[in-house]
Image 1 (cartoon, rainbow, N blue to C red):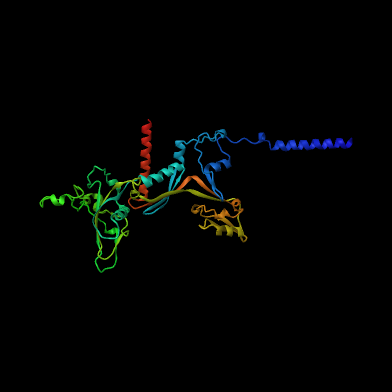
Image 2: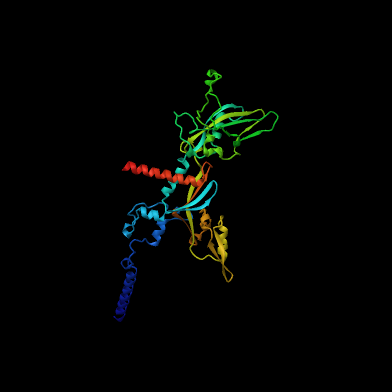
Length: 393
């Protein structure tokens, strides 16, 4: 009997211990989450794209205003909050290239700027080519296409669009001529874009119908109708219109070959043809974030530095002959994942992208400076928003 009583006593103590353990981990005893604030792990998922060794995760954006309503967090977009958080920081500005950070903006807006820069900002480009003579090996159509892709350094805001019914004039057309000849017995001749000469008075080619009907006293009609010379305008008097780059190869002529033509440039947009696009490229990427999850020292630190091809990591001396790895240049990280590709390294290094911080790069073709292109893109987006508001009201 004593043994049975002793066994029952031990079972009772075991049961009470289990109850205590269960009570300690009970969900009812967990502390309440502060209202209006997300837990750290959910906040990380909301604001970062996590880049694992195989593929990125949390790439979607939660735009639903009530996504975190149970935690007392309003996820809706508020104008005041956007205005206070949105920033544009210039990182690098060169003659034809601009790099800046757009902070606190949704990916859809960043992509809207990119699309406007590529397709909706107007420039001047050669549209019509009148070929008087072409004995080169390049077909007329190919030659005209090559001429259309040559960037012209002129402000398109000084010109008007030309419709099908408009007459080419000094307000909507720029005329160039090109005449190159390779004499017999000489070496092959390279025809460069510098051979395009601006004609401020308009076309010099006489209309085909005028050659037989015009009298000697009357001024023959040409392919344009300029009322005044373009070089009388103050914008062009000291800055003549010319191709942006003078060393673009248009054609190569052999001995005895010749090209004589006239090229008319008009105003257009990149969505009509790529030759009117003002940018060589406009692109963005999310700001990389590289985090060391633990101290990486000595041989491991040297191994980590060697893994990265773009030198994101560096080594610092912490004294007593010890070295420690640091994240020195996180901005240049391309997320190649070489630092976490080896097994176990994903527990040492975390690769992320900040999903509302974009590194934006604009490479201009030369018609307008890149900083002007961005401000013009902002104006176009503003006009679109005003148009939508007007139609909805």
